[in-house]
Length: 160
Image (cartoon, rainbow, N blue to C red; front, side, top):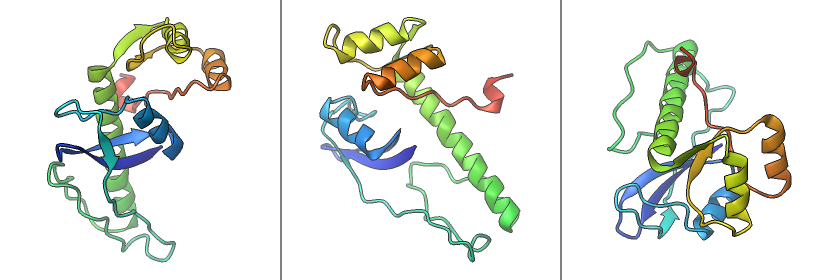
């Protein structure tokens, strides 16, 4: 997964996750990436600072500041273990944000997911964001046909 900082033609800034850079390119080309604030499909990548932590600096690295719209993470004790805990909390928060965004902005087609995805891919139905259920075999078949699919992340608190 890759996270991109994006902005629309009306200068609204937001972030989104993609399976790969080619998945981003494909979705932008099909106008599936839209601004969550105004709905504009004229979206571009914003400049981002990479988060790279070398082997020698794992305990000392400080991540770049988050955008002003993102709430500050909870303060945690310092050290390599606490850094990993903070990174895990941040990752879980981002994954929850991704799930919430998909659930809010896409249609749940349930067990019809594979059929709906195929119909849109082959032009039988209009493209729209969807999510639903597919067996591992159905998902593999969709991928083999060139249909982009990704599993929704499941977090431990989702299982309770």
